[in-house]
Image (cartoon, rainbow, N blue to C red):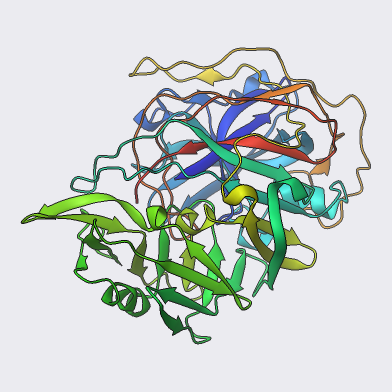
Length: 459
C-alpha cells in the first residue's frame, strides 16, 4: 500500500494527491510540461498560475530502487494539514522513469530529515518543527488495512482496493488514537527514521539480530518489509512448504511464497517490546498454484540495500499493526497499540485547507481534475525567523506562515490503477491504485489530522 493526503501549492492554491513517505525527504510534483503517459489523469502544477512561485535553473533528479524523476528546483507556498510554509523548496518534475507514478497521485512529500534530501532543502515538516510552529515536534500515522489478499499473476495484476487509509496527525500526540504505553527507540541517525531492531519471531522461534544487521528504516512509502537475504531466508525456513517466488525482472531481490492455508505468526521487537504482524498482512495474496496447493506471496523479501543504507526497510505490512510516532526532539520513533486494535478511518483532530483547482493532464481513461472552492490562505505573517531552515540552491529559505483552521478538508477520489511500491531513497517507490474521498470536520485545534487515502499497490 501507499498512503496519501492532499497538499496545496501556490497562490491561489492548487491541490494535489500526495504520497507521504517517511523513507525520503524531497518534495516534488509533476507540472504542466510533463508529457509522460504516467502524468495522464493526474492534476499537474501550473507555475504561471501562482503569484508566489519562484523558479530556478537548478537541476533536480532522484533515483529510487524502482523509478526516478528529473526536473528543476523551485519555491512556493505549500500547505498540508492546516500548516503553511512560504518559499518551500520543491522540484517541478517533467521526466519520470517508467513505473514511478500513477494517477491520481501527482506528488510525493518526503517526511525524512534534511540530511537525506537530494535537493539539500529542509523538508516541510522540519521547517515547522525548527521554527517552533508545532505544539510538539512530531507527526504520527495510523494506517488502515486495505490489502485483502490481492491476486498476483506474474507480478503484474492486482485487486485494487477502494477505502480510506487511516489518519495522519501533524504537531500533536493525540491520545484518542492509541491505547496503552508508547515504546520509544532512539534514532541511529537523523536521515531516515532508522532505529535498531532487537529481534524477530516467526512461529515461536526467535532470531536475534547483531549490530551489523539490525538497523531498520521505518518507512510509510514501502509496501512490504525488506531485509538481509540470509535473515529473510531463515524466516521462511520456519514456514513449511515455502519456496522462492520470482518477481518478473527483479533480480536484485529474493521473494518467497508459502502455502496459502498456512497461518504465519510474526513479530518484530524494538526496545524490548514485541509487536505482532497480523497474518493477513504477512500474506500478500495469491502468487500461483503448484499441484493442488495455492501459494501466497510473503510480506518479507530479501535484498542487499547497499553500503551505508539501513539493513531493513520496515513498511506498511508492519505499520498497519501499530500507531507510529516520528518525534524529532528527542529524535526517536515510538510505537503504541491502536485504539480498538484497528486503525481509525475518522480523524479526531483536523485543520486541513480547502480544495482548489489544479490543471489536469489529458486522461486516456477519462479521469479528470477536481474543481471546488478555493483555498483560504494566510492573511498574517508568522515569525519569519527560521532556525536552520535551508532552501534549494539559489532559492530563499522557507518560512512558516500562519496556521489556518477551516471547517472542512477533502481528499480527491481517484480512478483505478496498478503499480508497484518500494520506498526509501535508493530503495524505490511507485504510486498506484485507487483512493477514497472523505470530508473531515475541524475541532479547532492547532494540530491537524487528515484522512489518508490508501493506494493498494504491489512491489
